[in-house]
Length: 333
Image (cartoon, rainbow, N blue to C red; front, side, top):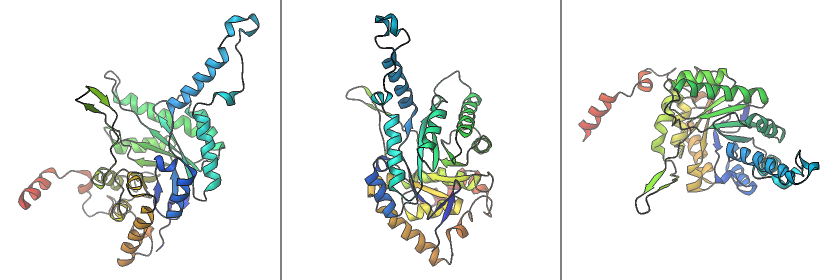
């Protein structure tokens, strides 16, 4: 079965990408993912806070003690290698991964403002990344900040990074825009070569025993696929960009549903953390068998065949069919 696909202009052996997670942190686990069949990998994110912390640490090192001598009023300029606090280590891991793997290595930047992103985007490109994923993680909690301004911030960031690099650029976003389809188009017009749907905004919990707020990471389940499935089907064929699906991708059935809706690639993190890298080969076998049993010759032949563009009932993707769903559920119970 021909499972090849294209994503961000890259030729991939199949639609499964190992998404950013602890499993993409070391060269050893990256090699295990490649051996299991991953078509590409996304490295853990370099966070905006890491960039800012490294810059601040370097600045503090330069000016430390400068007030004690008239000859040092401009500050000292030590060797920068002694003051790496995260970003340089990330670049070293990127170079090592690129050297060890034969599949594409996609770097990731995580933040919500321009900051040092444009500089580090160029450095990441120079370090050998095959593509760059902007993981825009912003929870809009400012009560006086209009939604239109948030959209402008996103677009400004994408535009600046696009101007800084020539490698393919994907943008990973959340679904919480007033007009998701319009925002998707604007992101592509700003320079995104692909969109990754969707970012999971992790929710904190409250511990009643200690009355403290506790960060809480809960792995996804296949039930979270529905939101991604809807928007994948709506956007397929309507924007000129690659579409990657993430959140809730656990089984061969999940992959197939997303491909039928129009996804170019499907990204796994939680499923691999639960089942290990070898789970990829199990999923790929299931995808190939399903397509073969139904007479498909390739993955491309199936892609988008149940999208809004091809569906006889496109409103099933555009509307919730709330009343119908409730009536149908009630009649069965």
